[in-house]
Image (cartoon, rainbow, N blue to C red; front, side, top):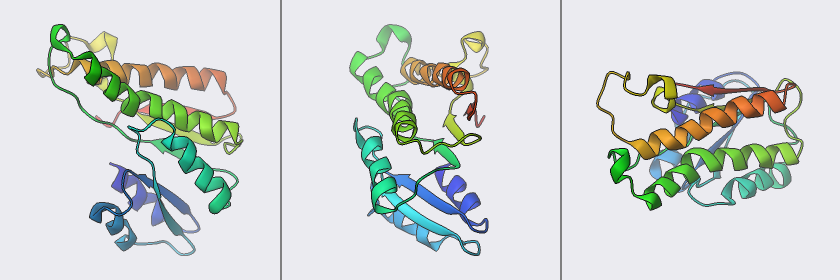
Length: 180
């Protein structure tokens, strides 16, 4: 999905795309340079490993100080991992914590980092990726035997966070996107 976001925005004219990846030296990250670029648009590939607390703060620091970008129109928190695919009675706590770091806390850290630097002007969008599997109302009605409680727990945090951030920041457009 992340590559699709980059491809879509980069093809637009006069757009600066900041692609945050775990490892900028990885061939997949390097291949982003081969995407079509709209007239006047630019691509910057940054390191942001969401499994590492503090990495979002470092990435935002690079954006502000090295790239000299003072504000962001759209921020998309797209990182996500899946866990051990077991029932709640067998969820390993350590795995739950790892998933919550990547799937939830890293997005909160990203929001806080851009918010504290005042990089989100009124009307800016902050989007995080959620899932129907996090819906309390859909538990038991998903229509498939997806037994990954830790993934659903971590994404439920994201859903609540998105609603709470939206309520607390009425001048921003904050929402959770469920890709289906």
